[in-house]
Amino acid sequence: MERILELQPELVQAMLETFAMIAVAIPLAVLFGTPLGIWLFIHAPGGIAPLPRAHALVSGIVNMVRSFPFLILLIAIIPFTRLVVGTTVGTAAAIVPLTVNAIPYFARLVEQNITQLGSGAVEASRAMGATRGQIIRNVLLVDAKPAIIGSITITTVSFISYSAMVGLVGGGGIGDFAIRYGYYRYETAVMMVAIVLMIALVTLVQFSGTRLARLTDKRI
Image (cartoon, rainbow, N blue to C red):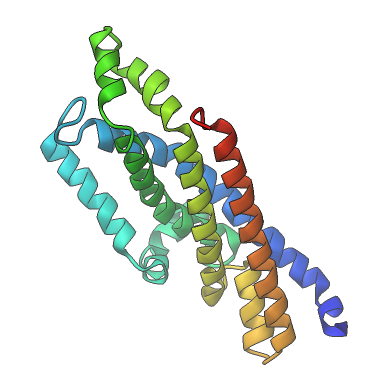
């Protein structure tokens, strides 16, 4: 316990770094991933405005980025990371690969959320003369809101674990803390504290996201 108290400033700093990674990467994933997911749905074969060739190209790129193991992606885009933030270590550098990986991940979830709504509401809106923009804003996004909130929750939980991986390359955060103090120095108690904090953070995010999704679900 004395060792934990001794490392409290470093532990607090690590938690703040993890919060910073998630607080930047997830909103950017939602900001860019949502319109990308809508685009994939609209222009899919059989969608509202099919563009088979363009859809195949964009969908292929999304699948390619999603298929990269995160640590490999982290290393592969080091030149891009350096170009964007001017460094390849630290919290700012870790945010770049997290965001690059999160955008297509979330976009695919949004596409699935909208696809699961079925075509009934869309066809009814088109029959009433609604424009494509009105269908997107007033039908698709409204009906898919609970599912999209659930997808944000899933993405956040997944990328909390990814944020721990960046500790392997000096990215900061709770993962870096666990590796430096728990693994390299064989301090099991420190490692366990880091694990408990990660579990608590994931549990809080999952509970809050599930609760919010239920509150916005018109069917309940």
